[in-house]
Each structure stands twice: as structure tokens, then as C-alpha cells.
Image 1 (spheres, one colour):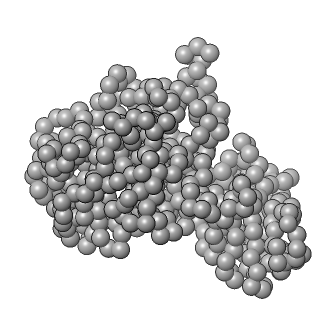
Image 2 (spheres, rainbow, N blue to C red):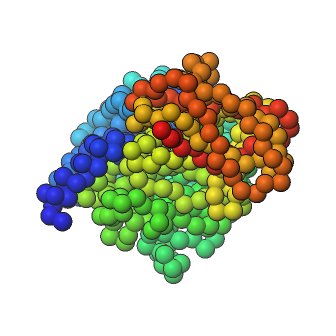
Image 3 (cartoon, helix red, strand yellow):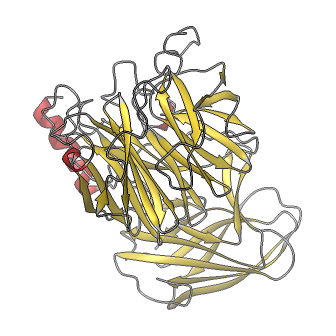
Amino acid sequence: MSKVLNIFFLVGVFFFSMAQNPIVSNKGLNDPHIHIFNDTAYVYASHDKSIKNKKFIMEDWWVWSSPDLVNWTKRSVLNPKETYIGKEFSRCWATDVAYRNGKYYWYFSEGNQQAGVMEGNTPTGPWKDVLKKPLLTSDLTPTHEYDMAVFEDNGEHYIIFGVWDYYIAKLNYDMVSLAEKPKKIEINNPRGPYNLEGKNKEKPTDDKPFVHKYNGKYYLSWGCFYATANNIYGPYDYKDVIINKESFAKGYDAPTWPTGFLQGRHGSFFEWNHQTYFAYCDISQTGNRYFRDTFISYVHYKENGEIAKIRVDGVGVGQYNLKDSKVIEAEDYFKAAGVVKKQIKNNFVVVTDAQKSFLNYPNINQIKSYKKVILELLAPKGGQFSIEIRLNSLKGKKIAEKIFNLKEGLVNFENLEIELTSALKNKENLYFLIEQKEQTHLQINSFSFSK
């Protein structure tokens, strides 16, 4: 395929499929760290200057916000002149943010050398360099002091940084000084994009570490590689990668980085409305490793705590395109309460664990012509369940309601229909309200639409 046709093809995919990956197209938004403040998602990111870049040229840092992970607005720009750097600078590398005691603290990398911090009264600033010097100096540890992540645990904040070897230190209550000397994080049997076989002792991991917590365990990640520990300081045991060849939808598997699709996936995990996501770098739509996009994918955890392989596609999260697929997986909700995601064999389902539960799927596109919803349900212990479908909110207009009596002892999901009582618009925001009459658990695998 020629370059011109390839560009046309990619634009066509973006337009006609109403793609939301990348979250902000053709802007060079990368190294994303997403945080939720006041029920709004904010991405703190680096910024590749141009599609014509032949090396990393990053002249400022960005903040964008979204109410739904679909619609994004640029809210703030941090220029290196406003920091202790004090001049134009083309190596504005990865960044992260934290909140404490009414203040927001925006940490930034001075290339691969040092790291500073800005303070603001809102998630978007205005920002002030209260130190007027680096927080992490270039002689602090044997690694390079950049590409930081800030992690909160039980009211304490920690900063994690470095390349190949990672270091961690607790922050003081002021968030602009270290409470302790940084400690090296031990990782057992690490892997990385330059160390796929575990034999490269000089480059065992990568840069851009990140820490998140799930079900009492700490997850240390570097791109799509991760390790787990029972203690924030480690030691960590390497587990796996979260992307494989089967992760990619057509048109999203190439081009990629020199060492392959596992390289360059700088990013962060975040949770919102009882759903977990991974935001990360991708170059499949730009074709240039020096002009990166940000993608977001759903994250699901296996029963053993490992992370299932993510899906890399153009639909992204927070929206559902019925032109691409008539089936919506239940675990890919935007909001939920009274449910848990559960691994059943090699599949993930949603299981109710309260008398009243709900699931929300906004931005369902191309839904106008459909008259029925087909739910794939199973209740191993049987029981009676009522399901309502409402528009836009839990108290919105009711467009469907039905009581299901499910038999005990079944092991396979049943396809059960609900008729819609009102005509739909081309895009809708659906809430599924579930009430169980007895103390049993309903498993929901997926739902689809029928005319």
C-alpha cells in the first residue's frame, strides 16, 4: 500500500469508525498519566512537537481533561521558562501529578537528568515553582533522576523514578522535599523491551516506572511489563507483559518501535467508577516513533492477580460502536456499583454482589434502529432478577423492564431478550439497573442489540 493510500486508509478508519484511540489525534500527546479529580479525568503528558520530528523534540508539558474519556479539552500548558530551567528547552520528558491538602503538585522531567515540581491551587494551575531548583538532582542516585511517578498509599506519597534500576523515596508532607534517602527497588528476574530473554544485565527493564495497587498488591510497571510485591519498597517479582500479538485490532499493529510492539508503551494505570484502565503511548497511527499518540484500554485482573492482555484498537474506552460490533462485553462498563469483575475460565464477566446493582454504558453509537436488547446471563444457583434499562441516569426515562427467573444448576449462559419500549436516538447513554430477589449472584457476560 502506498504512503498516500495508507494515510487515507488511517484517516478513513478514524472517521467512519468514530475511533477514540488515539484520545487526542495528531497532537503528539504522550507519556500519559491520568488522574481523577472532582469526577473529571485529567491527563498530564509530554508533547512531541511535530509529525516531522526525527528525534525527540518536546518543548512543553500539557494538561487535558475529559468528563468521559472520550471528549478531551486542552486545559493547561507548562513552559520550561516557568520552571527553574528558566529558558526554552526541547527535552520536556515525562511528568506526573499528586494532590495533598488542597494543593496540586506537578512533577516534571528535565530531560533524563533531573526532576522538578510545580504547585497549583487547581488541577490545571496556574503553576508556581516553589523550590526554584530541582527536587531530584542528577547526583542523587546511581540511576538518572527522571520519568517519575508519584503514588499515594494510606495517606503517604512516594516518588519512583529512574531507568534500568528504579529508586523510591517517601515525600514529606510539603510534597516538595524527600522524607528519606531514595532506596533501590529490587526486581527479581526482570524483563524489558531490550531484555526479552532475561540476559541483558545492563538494560534489564526500561525507563518510565509506574506503581499502582490492586487487591492489596503493589504493581510496578515499565511500559507494558510489570512486577508485583506485597510491600511498596519491594522486592518485586516480575510477572508478564499486558500486550501480545493477539491484542491488536487490524490497522493498529504496525508500524511500531525498533525492538517491536512491546517497546515504548510509556503509560499509567488508573481507576474510575470501579473500572481500571491503562493509558499508554502508541505510534501505529502516526508512523513516527518521535510523534506519539495516547491510547487507553480496559484492564481486567485474573483470579491469580495477573493482568489479562489488553485490547489495542480504535474504539478505545467509554464508547461503543455498534457498526463495528453488535456485542458489548459487560466488563467494559464506564460506571458500576454492586458488581465485581470475575474471571470465568478464559473469559471475564460481571457478577452482582448486592441486592441492587447497576451498569452504565455511555456513548453507544448507531443504536437508533434497534428494538431489543439480548442479555447473555447465568445464575448457577438460580433465582429471580429484575432488569430495567434507563436513559442518561439512574432515574432517567425507563425504556425497558423485565423479570427473569433463572434455573438452578445451569452451566452455560442463556440469551434472554428485553424489548425496548421507546425509540432511540443514534447515540444513547444506557443504565442497566439490576435487582436480585434472593441472595444469589447474576453473571452477565455481554449484551447485544437486535432489530
